[in-house]
Every structure is written in structure tokens, then in C-alpha cells.
Image (cartoon, rainbow, N blue to C red):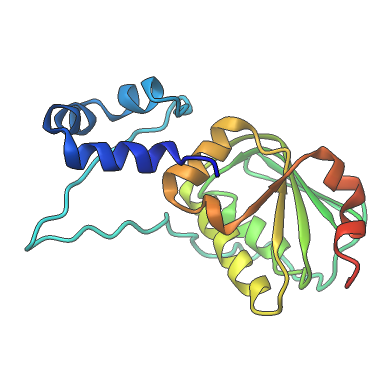
Length: 192
């Protein structure tokens, strides 16, 4: 079983006071030193709970859907959408993403993901950034699909983005697969 480096760090902060202070004051440096890549431009803030204070972290708001977006109701192969630095394209039942997934384009990604009701492969090979709004969209979609025994398969996720899933504690809720699954996924899931 693989160890979760973030869990190791959090456990160590409970046992080692000097390490705890260093982690609170310099989280990015500690994470990098412990083998967790922090993407450029990402700010990490450590907060401590107390008996009289509890911090709850929620994803960025998805915002309202612009009026120019229309519901098409079904996935069209080779359909491609460009939205605020993100290209979303369908290749049969694989969703291919390219660019940055941010709060600005997460509502459109959600709109696209709502078109599918079965296990879905999402190709992340060309994604350079995933923000908290994007994580929220993926989590909502995973939750919706899992109600019917389906799931999201995340294909070719770059290591910095995979680390964000681990840092957020969401890594265990998704299945990460290699490029071979993008083209052969139906052999592993014959119930489609």
C-alpha cells in the first residue's frame, strides 16, 4: 500500500513541535522537501483547529451560467468548446481537456459533464492547472455518477495535478488510469 505523503506530514506535525511550526510558517517549502510538488502560483495556508474554533474549507463558488450557454442534451463526438483558457472536447465517450481549469470556466465544465450518465474517462494529459472550483465540479460529478454505480476515470493526470488531489484529500475518491485506458476503457467496463 502506498503511503500518502500529506498524511505523513500531518501525523508528524502532531508529534514534532519544531516541524509543526516550520510547516505552519513555510508550508510550500516543507511540502516540496517531503516530495509533494506545489504548482507555481498556488498559495498554501495552514490553519489550526482549536476546541473553540473549527475551520471548514469549501471550494470556490462556481458562479452563474452565462446566458450564451445552451443545453444540447447529448454528447456529440468531436464536439469542441473553448471557454476562458480551457478547451473541452469529446472523443466518443472520452472527455479531453486542455488548458487551465479555473473558477471562470468550471461552470462550463460542469455543464459538459452533466451530459453524461455513465462511467466517463477524462483525459487530463493537456491540463496545466486545476483550481478548487474544478475539483468541486469533478467531485459533484463523481458523486452523481456513483449513485448509479458509475465513476470518473482520470486519465494521464500530470503529477502536480495528481498531488492537488492528494493534498485536498480527494485522491482516494477517483481512479487514476494511464493512457491505455483512454482507448481500451470499454474492455474493463463491459456493462456500458
